[in-house]
Image 1 (cartoon, rainbow, N blue to C red):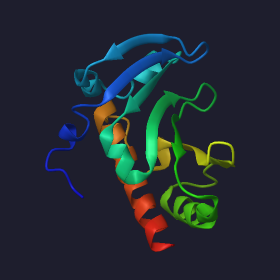
Image 2: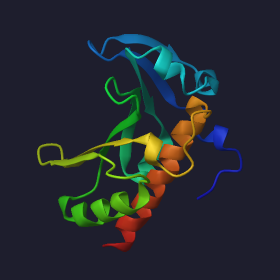
Image 3: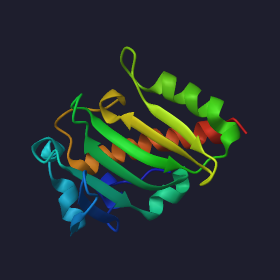
Image 4: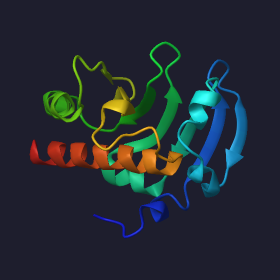
Length: 157
């Protein structure tokens, strides 16, 4: 499913900025916030962005958080992937082939209590990433990456 204007995809999204240490809400943002340059997170390293969207249902995700890693300086994506445990090999195969770079590190752990995969990966290694993205374009890139993952899981049934 393609949207003619990618900016429209998250026009009705719920967006929060929160403190990484305390997880305290700093502000709820309008979709205008998505026009900010992605390096906003590098100048506000203590913050993460939390985004909810109706579009995430299509890719088996509830919410996505984005922050800058304090040690490596990468843009880290954190989410819960609502796929059954049996999809582990399909997910790993897709992620290993889709993330670019040598020895890319990501975390993928199934939580039996919640029935979701806790999935964290560096956005910097997703094809199409560059430092000049806006926050909205970064979320669109994340969405596209996860959409293709959802397709791979669907085919792997």
